[in-house]
Image (cartoon, rainbow, N blue to C red; front, side, top):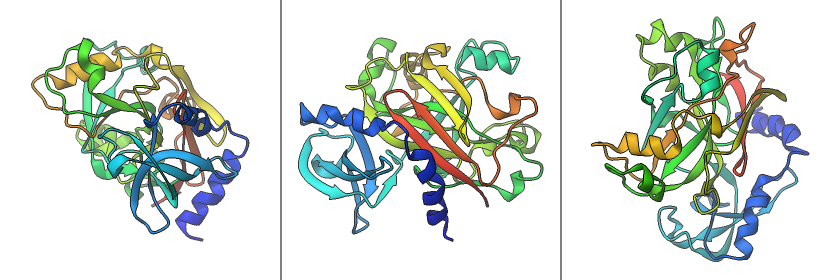
Length: 309
């Protein structure tokens, strides 16, 4: 059986009966010609498209979308009325860079027995780690024995404009919107095997799932009060709220832009709440056959199965 077939089998059972947040976000389209809920996808001719979902299959996965003007998520976002078949759902953005924040939830800092940071803790992930919704997280052969691969559900910021030296008051004007991210991490590589730096442990292929859609700042006006949860095989592992963040979205964008340009298309992972696998007793790492579902209020659920490399 192909990976794509295994993904369909794994995802179908978990999606049945789940609330379709795609449908809820799509209600805006009835009163506006501007998209507020964006998906990237391949059409039935395998052409790259961008639009707002309009029709869904029995699993509440988009099967048809209303294309946006010039197929450009950084443009006017005007809906064209041209409907296109969704053949494969992609990550809602192709990142130009992925910036990540560590220890940005108070209760996560507490569970790891670390002090609250005075400034944001920055690291980066390779853009090659980006993974589409429903595609499989692959556990690297060099990070499989013993088990060490962990999940981290996160709110992801997507920059819509180039940003430099922006104030906190103006920061959100440069943000296009938000999506769901999973900062998948290999814990031993995050320590000595990675030389003490985090980038290697978090940049393996498939270690940055993003999706299922991008919801614009027009629809999410307060990113600081969103429920966020992570479930593995139906068991809730993380259940928190972005109100527990130490540094807000505006603070992060402002801080990261000082003397450093954040180009449009930059993705910023804002940190993970408490409940990660390595802090549990005993540790609960990902293994082949698992399914990870990360849900953020107002955006939707990012679903990815787990396989061996």
